[in-house]
Amino acid sequence: MMPSNNVRHRIRAFAARWLVPYLPYPHFMCVAPLDAVLRILRRAEGQIPPAYWPRLVLLLLLSGISTVASLPERVIVGAWLRLRPPRMERDNAPVFVLGYFRSGTTFLQNLLAADPNLRSPSWPQVLAPQTFVVGWSVLRYLFVPLLPLTRLNAVVPVGARLPAEDDFALNNMGGMSVLAGRAVLPRRQAFFNRFHDLDALSADEFGRWRSHQFAFVQRLALVAGGRRLLLKSPSHTARVRYLLELFPGAKFVHISRSPEVVFRSNLLLARELQRAFALQPPLPDDEQEEIITREYLATEMHYLADRARIPAADLAEVRLQDLTADPVGEMKRIYRELGLPFPRGSEERMLQVAATFVKQVRNRHPDLTERQRAHVARLEPLAAAFGHAPAQVAETLDVDSQQRIG
Image (cartoon, rainbow, N blue to C red; front, side, top):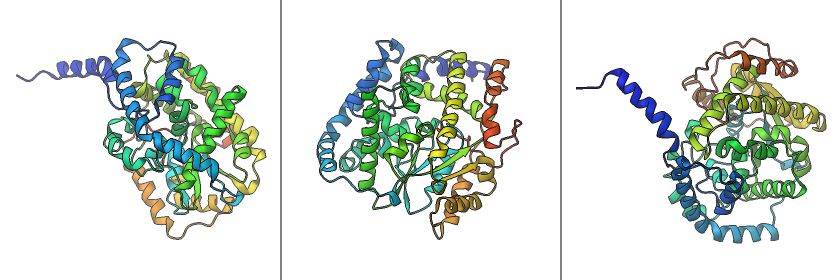
């Protein structure tokens, strides 16, 4: 006799609450070097409950294998870059996509990546940043079969050739990312969130971030074939002044979205990240909401303060509703404002990117509580600064069809 719908629902609810969050499966740090994993785990201060130990053991095991496989490249390519670093002139400095998490940065990055003259890092390159130049020929046999199992698809479109977020590389090189707190050790977010805007870092920490960010770009330049690099991480929005110092001549494209929708979407993102990758219990809802509100507001205020530092010919801005309404038209405007040649034949590829995002299923967000509405009210300066009406009009293109980062 088949169990009733009520019984099946109870079984699924029990599994979702007590089994799925703790099941061991490949972590997005499983191909990070063991020293980077241990650097993050040290900040847990022993506060990893036994329920998370199976996940932790599998992470350490796979990371250990990756460390052995990647060691030759870490030595050889590191020495090569010190002796013959790739040249990066002002006219070939990276293009940075700016905007807070869930503002449409992933959509914009994919549109820009349709340009054959730009090179964005792929997911294997950001998840295994220490070994994608040479050692990837060996490591790919371990990693590619595991990629669909990492559950990254729960939070971001993932594929061996899809554009990726370089903050994952900073995380997997040494824990210098908000991801280490938001996704791995949610109870230590206060420590790792300092790597978002970099302002509160010690001199040693800032030096490590600077050297790792530059080293990753150098490694990527080795395989870019002379193409201009395209980098996207929401944290870059709060680091413009430091990026200008590190990459003179860099160009920036900032995307914004209705703050209320961004806030709602980030609540879902935080829950999904922690459900998939955390080694600690999540923070209470009110604490996580406060972190998101404060960080979102501070991130865009950092950008607005630093915007005047960017030469006019190196900056373009776009609202998500305008980009979704006319993807090709807005992309041509962005290229004109940046002084970049619009690639011939890219219209079709860009329309294919837009069509791919349209086909996916829309998330449903619950109504805001009174406390959450108070958080949204604090974000009104951002709606005014970027020209977003307080009431959200239904968008023609859904960029939240998956719980994607950005």
